[in-house]
Amino acid sequence: MEEQNRINDIPEEKENGDIETRDDITDKIPLTTSITDLGLTKKVSNLLQRVGINDLERLLKLDYKDLRNVRGLGTKGKNEILTCIHSFGYEMSGESSALEYQNLVRRSRGEELLEDLGLSGMACKALNRAGIYTLETLIKNLNKLEEIPNVGTGKKIIVEAWLEDLKRKKSEEGDLISPPQDSNQEVLNLQTINNELQQEIDDIKQRTVKKRKLLEKYQRLMDEKEQLLQQEQELDRQLAQLRGEQNATTPQFTKSTKQGQ
Image 1: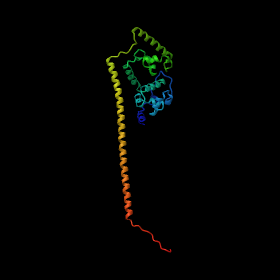
Image 2: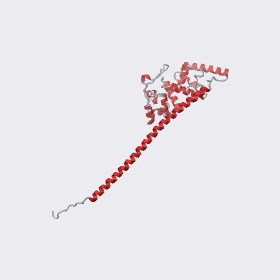
Image 3: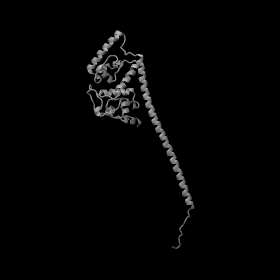
């Protein structure tokens, strides 16, 4: 219930006509489509429904950062939601900054991003919106490119030609091109990660304080209830004692009957 309240408290700033869309997508579905019909995994679908997100419209009215209020939904689940939304031609508010942060984390781990390796334009965007950001992930999904929404044959040809050029550079230079990592970039990466962790810690602290206050209030109410019950029992005892004393001092009258009547 507390999780649902946090989601329900999110201001619904965007009306139906204000939900972000992309011009390069035409495969739209109604905003009233149930969460269970979006193609999400059962786990992600259940987590969203548990906090009151039951259709596409309610999901799109969230900011990306609000997804962290969904307990049990990790990075993989968030990426799944973004991929699903993008495949239908919509975007979630605040997702750009979140993806930039994720890319910083990927770079800090030494992963090679497609945009850093020179794949730009609509092909790169289409792959990103399908959850393919790195060269390693792209290679694993090469045989599925035509199945990815908004990639198709045309962008597949572009990606394959780019890969061939990349292989040629690897042959010439002995390795794949990697984005430079200087000390300033590493500091920036660590600072970004620390900021994100600090935000999560602050959120946990706020929830902890709220729960502690609720527990303290509950304990006070239970103590008050116990005191009132004891007072009630004492009053009942005093009333019973007064009735006993009154009965003891009241004269007892009996009716006499006349014989023969």
